[in-house]
Image 1 (tube, rainbow, N blue to C red):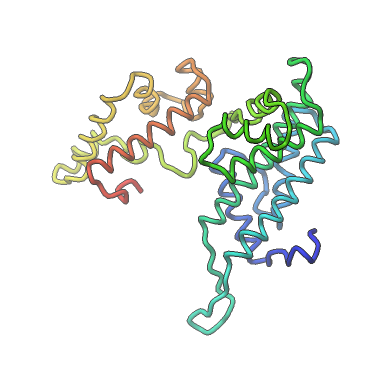
Image 2 (cartoon, rainbow, N blue to C red):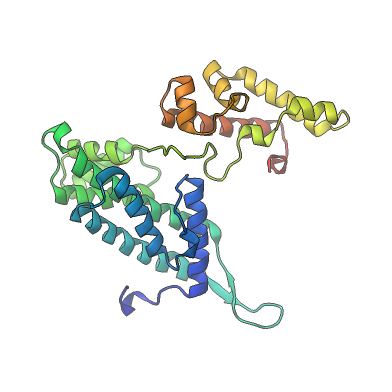
Length: 302
């Protein structure tokens, strides 16, 4: 628990909202934590993630270094909680005059959770890097350097989103006097995205193309007088015809039986699961822009 000089921890009501948002974020990322909703604090949720990840990659008894990283990550989480939530939460009177109505800027809260989750993710991957890949790369950065980079890299990226990865690494190398080759080595590993076997196709709470426009051939025939569906059907086919063959096949995956995850799709198309995820996300964003170009209301995509 943080000391009093850092300010009071969030109230039970705010913590409940935190936990709810964090659970939503985990669901969007395809991370399944049994009984997560029953936990009363984010700390317990983080521990659940840690133990699940550790058992999957490093056995039932993770190294002490792993717990050191986790402790640092949890401290960051609580400090960020105070900074973001206490700073953006205000109490107003409701219709009955009660002063317990909490107004929260959810965009700021979401940014906080993304940052906190990145901290935990970097810690986990740095641990796995240090523990499992030592023998594959010969001489590696020492433990203290890895630990320092685990904290510096995501924070620097979060604070300086306009910088490219190369420029970011150069600045970090000069500022902290760390060999840029070591920075690149660690950065290349901990920024690799893993894809769970249970990862859902949809990401970041965005619907897929075929959920947005479900079987427009049938819809158009059933709604001959519905200009919206007819227009969407035309736009969909126009957009698909502009795509390369592989992207078009991935977007048409619902026509493939018993395919529901990135891993299954990767086997079908013989590319990596992460590449399938990237193509799916990128192409769907292109479709959203395509709709905007035709001045269609985005509410049609809900």
